[in-house]
Length: 240
Image 1 (cartoon, rainbow, N blue to C red):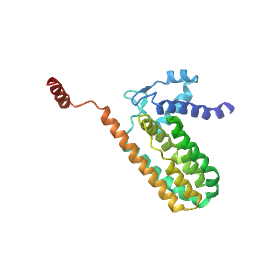
Image 2 (cartoon, one colour):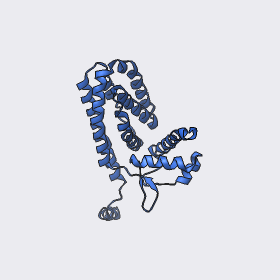
Image 3 (cartoon, rainbow, N blue to C red):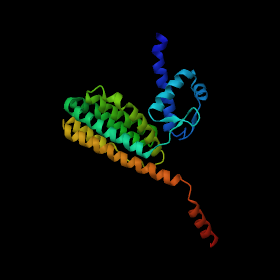
Image 4 (spheres, rainbow, N blue to C red):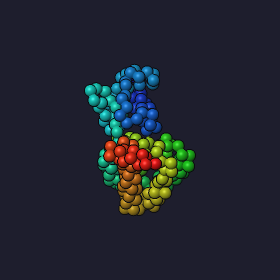
């Protein structure tokens, strides 16, 4: 029984380690995940690796490879938009409830998270920015007092980390969303439930537009030029 009790923690550690590699860009979209190599690199058996891979597949970070095995899933802008729409609805509810029931807790504990987030942006470290953002949103779920919100949002937060890693790593000047976070927190701390819900929804829908537009732009810049364009470029160069 003791060995089994340790297993979920080990699976979570493996999952987090792999997710960190994907978010950091060390494992690229389409790259095949080899269980044996991963287990050897992490110094664990194949069983927790297999369970961690299944979790990440169910959360949309990995997908089945042609034939067999798993690959890092390419980011689909439409799926990203859908994820943020769901987050906007549920987190709006979370903030509404938080303002009703946990305004005092928001006032006492929230400012430290805002400060940590601003420092993360100032550092320019993508991993710190993502961690601070996730911690703030998880804090909102706790403030809601509804125990179903956090587990419902967990897979969406995992996917969000992947999206943020992809976009922030390519952005020389990441946008500072902590003024928006501070406004949400202030609405909660002052007990303005409707305003808190509205701000949370707007924040996430704006984030969706930003992330989707960056992903689409990145896909266009990465795609090879069309044959007609290539011929036109060759013709142009021939007259130089």
